[in-house]
Image 1: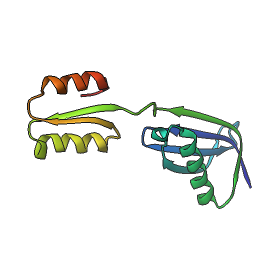
Image 2: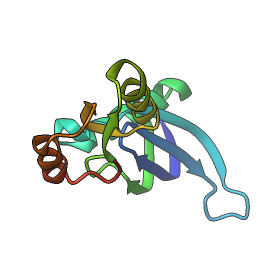
Image 3: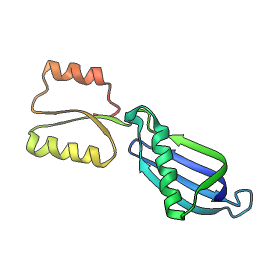
Length: 131
């Protein structure tokens, strides 16, 4: 078993990353390693993704891990809600959809053509962070 001073986690909308540090109180803390796993916010429990990231780290360092302190931040509160809209689905809407997903957004609605009243009501109901 390897012991570290601090496990630092970032729980993002798509990926959870953990970094293990030792000699944390010194002028030059050292990184033991990093583990990565899919974020499980949509499963209703981000700790599952956190545990999976720790397991990934343990696999990489070929040892179980124990830590004194864990510090975490999260940007995974449902992710970045986005709707995308284009003139023609096969061109602009599809390109906007791919760009949004590539940026890590949680895509809630895609339209093509002129927005109908129903489309606008759906967008208002979603309350996206970005359109």
